[in-house]
Amino acid sequence: MTKKELLHNIILQGENETVEFKSSFNKTVIETLCAFSNNKGGKVIIGIDDTGKIKGAGITEESVQKWINEIKQNTTPQIVPEVEIIFDKEHKIVVLTVIEYPIKPVAYKNKYFKRVLNSNHLMNLDEISNLHLQTINSSWDYYPDPNHNIQHISINKVKKYINEYEKWNATKVHYKPIDFLNKQEILRNGKLTFGAYILFAKDLCTISDIQIGRFKSPTKIIDSLSLDTDIFTELDRILSFIKSHMMVEFIITGEAQRIERYDYPLEAIREIVINMLIHRDYRDSSGSVIKIYDNRIEFFNPGGLFGGLLLNDLLKFNYQPKARNKLLSKAFKEIGKVERYGSGIKRIFTICEQYGIVPPKFNVTNNSFEIVLFKEKIKVGEKVGEKVGEKVGEKVGEKVGENLTENQKSIINYILKNKFITAKELSNNIGISSRKIEENIKKLKEKNIIKRVGPNKGGYWEVVR
Image (tube, rainbow, N blue to C red; front, side):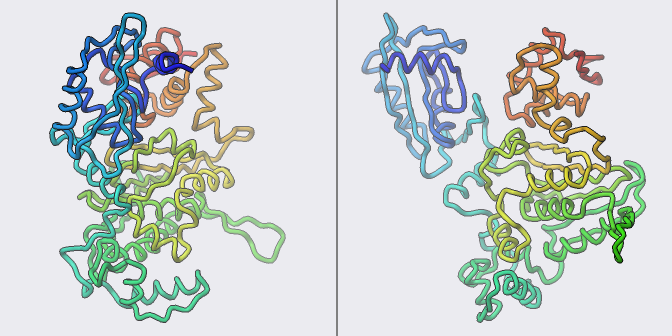
């Protein structure tokens, strides 16, 4: 296949995570090259408009060299794209290609951009910090805590952890507690890390605070618990509090011992709470919150999805796991409290399905993650995949006789679950730009599949067919 044929194939596929079209060279070209460098690499093709129409780039050898110099001078660390000029009839097309930069992030005039699907997004301080930590294969919890030292952790709690480590690994630890923490890199060169403090805090641990409440209504609370200690202790106390507010039925099986069945699966709750503790963004000033209602339990955690993960991929279990807090994740895994990295969400769905209750609901923003666990039982003959996930959209598509895209199916699915959902929430949940959400909504309205009831503010969505 010739270079020109390859170019036409790329144009037919349109802009995406690694391809951008530009009519001419400007500052957004450099921003996009930076975004590609901070992701998987990519191509900026100059001489093509947003619709994919070839218009050509008016260039000379000197102008291309000028572009390269401008890119080098305005990026830190400097990036130098590979340049390719392709002739298509009377038009000249310039292809600028960059690879994923090994040390991230790359900046354009002190601004950092990341690529999300087919658009660039300005990164905030947390995203910049996280991207750099990923590059050096580290995480925040491995860094020394400047406000605390070894005197602020409990040696007895460390000894208890070592006992669990020995049982799980069927081995004998011959190190003293502090030496063991150094060997496991929970301490760094004898210095207390943030992770060590969160795991073994002696007394008060203000950065791990969690509020739990039993609510009869959104405003009426009948019991509560506040925790601000090490996260191993918090795990036990959270599970104990939730269990004390759950209904239990006794199932007679004919055996000598009857079976206890709670209205929620304890194993799923345990999995959710462990995920909260090890994946929370402890740098965020807000705390974790658990609300127990008559028909559901809401688990709210600071810190959105990590490492560029999108909710759509999470719900399809189509992703490579990345830990926000590598030290905490490793510490839990070493004593058997985490089976396998990245398997928690799938396990939660599987446990709920086997228990016969409807699947949990996920709400995600840039800075928070919420799981809602429902008491409602699955109706006879109803499949879990038909309540959440892409199968809802597929069934709607079959009924209306339309060939719907995956994004359109996802939009319908989210509207069916929440008719008051906003375009911004759809964008965050599905992982595409607001402009793409608006385009897909417009197409669904034109096909008379969805409609807006009431005003933009205060109204709601309705699936018509």
